[in-house]
Length: 100
Image (tube, rainbow, N blue to C red; front, side):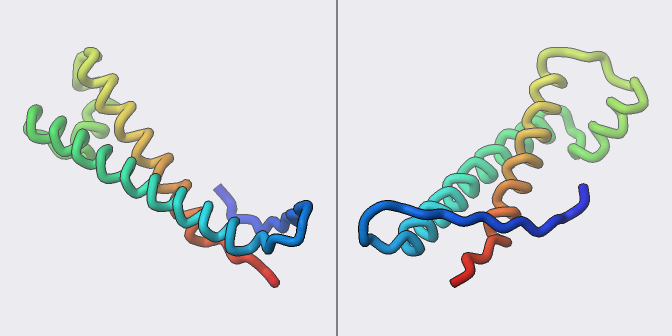
């Protein structure tokens, strides 16, 4: 995926400053994503321990059709995909800059 710069303009009604509100909302979302990442990491670690495989080895074996597809393998793949999405969102939010 290619990184691009984007600019948005936010306007509001009333005299209340928007910047602190937006910064707090972004920070809270980063914190919530962090909680999700930690929970996902715990679930992935449980799969790794249960099956005696690292996730990298698991994915390699799945890609090479060396494992039978089960509900467990589907859940493990789903956890890994969700973990990637949560990390990507958190990275994106951490990279935001609110211009004056």
